[in-house]
Length: 475
Image (cartoon, rainbow, N blue to C red; front, side, top):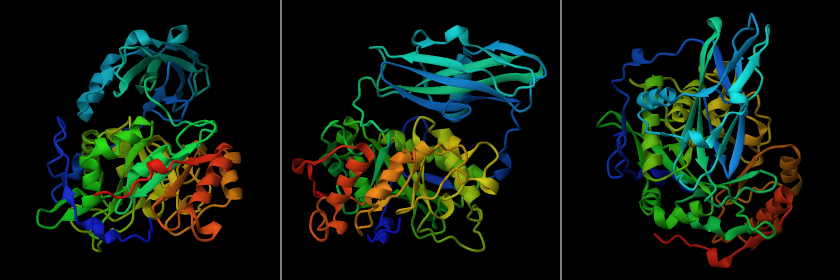
């Protein structure tokens, strides 16, 4: 992310987490053998005759987080107009979940049926000559018996009349009624990307809003773990430098306090000066690597992955087992990662080959908005992203990112445009209250006034900085 920090230190790595899908032992090396992959076994499914599409534009599956009760709406969308009026119903179909778990090596549990309501018995209509059905509502509610740390699934299915066939949808459900939330009035998410080589992630606890009492930060990205190639074994591995390793192995100390405040913790994956990267894995390699990311997230209770295509030394001619670096390959890795961890976040940096998954760069299975949850702009970037990530709503665009080590902050006017423009996220990179530019120097170069501007312009609130939650790097 073009930081002034020395990233070559990221190459001193320890491999952790397991290949095994049955459990994720944090002491084993994570490996993907790209040298001997048989790409012929990878198949792209034929065009569906119809899809269930959620209110967030996602087809096939989506994540719904709720407190007490929430309604999610879907529509059936056909690939060609119906030749006659269709009346049908949507129902819970546990077999859809069983097949998903078998295909993906997962063990998601069925959300209790008694906590699901399908108004009007889930009935819907598709008029003749129309491709889109009437809206179908799915209501879920909480219960004291639900585990707030677990993701459940509501598997939905409908068998359409005639030649239209059946359509399925997995609604991943997480009950947050027992958890605090940093959600604020405007809905804008603040993403704090922490340079952990120098900064203690616990510093994100120091920033709250005076009127709402909410934490300023919604998500914390640990920057950064790496993708590396092991020349001796011919394998691609996930590696963690000593700083990341210490934080992950001591997650109760460094990560649990953040999660207890409702913040999500995301692991960054970055190239590390060798032939491997997030933009040169073939389809089968991407699918297998996504399983390693899944194992890492589950081993350390992480909430997702952030992809940054930098610092890889891609080679020409392309080495065996890799493909030519491209946006398509980067999109493929994001897609396969979302397939592996549908209940977690897949976030991309709008830079290099993760900067555009639209147009001719799209993969055939899905629009970018179905497998990318947030796209975070490069520093101060504000270009519209609808064409780059089709289907990704403005509420998932990270605009006008700041760089807090170099003093590159958006102005109050630029921040205000995030709120008035309907955009939903803003990233701060390398925030650290222990750095000399925290509250000294010219006003325009200080971190504290920049954060105060965020509180005022994005939330119409006042920033509170708690000195008792100011943490030095202690490892």
